[in-house]
Image (cartoon, rainbow, N blue to C red; front, side):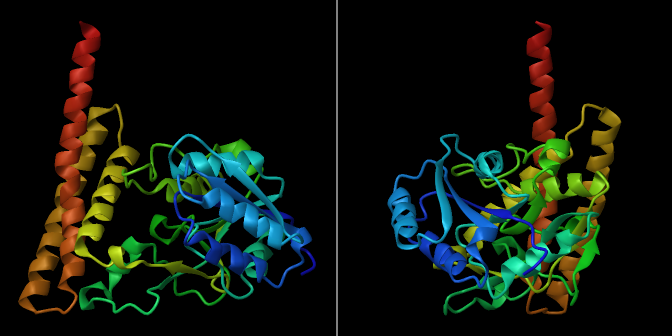
Length: 321
């Protein structure tokens, strides 16, 4: 345990009083001296018993440093940013309220920070279906839409590709980097019924572009609990649309030639994925729905980008008047 930096573990939560104790109990069971970390539960305007759960947990675990923080502005990025503001540790760790850590998670997640070049570390997110039967069509790449994440590396390894960057359900960042690269964008993540995404990946990308190493720690996993209502195609369509909308936000640019380039890219990518889908159907691939969802999510970008351009044109006309 020697060499570990003090850390703040931030858990944003909203109306998950039934699930939150599982994550808190997992933190209490960590084989780590509690002086090395504090737990910050950031309540994002819950209307259930979240506050009571936190205070009861703190009362029964006096050895742990746990703080309850109320963040009134809805949105998971607002909650995470509030946690960063309140954090006292040199390393800020992020968990989701439904992502209890496993094994020696804390030690393996923080160990890479002994290298001064490392700015961000993330570990696997292993989907836990809690004994529920998993539909056959959900046994492939679509598990990524449920926050499943894992790479093939068996040792802590630097990563540099957007698709390899870790998720905020299992992520650690040096606190001083938030003063350098800024906080989580509040227009790129969940807020109420709005299911945007990519706020975490965009944050990690900024850290990487600022010259810091991003490391994948394969031995620092969390379990991501999957409730029954997420095992439906309706839920995946909702998540997929959110990803398409997030892509439009990420690639918005005032220069028309850049927008034209993105239109061309979307059309070309959709064409390639459409051909792959046809091949999957012809070959009767068991997981053809994977190919369909990839095609659908990229195709969704085209009308969304057109709508964004139209709205911007209308706003410009209104301003000119």
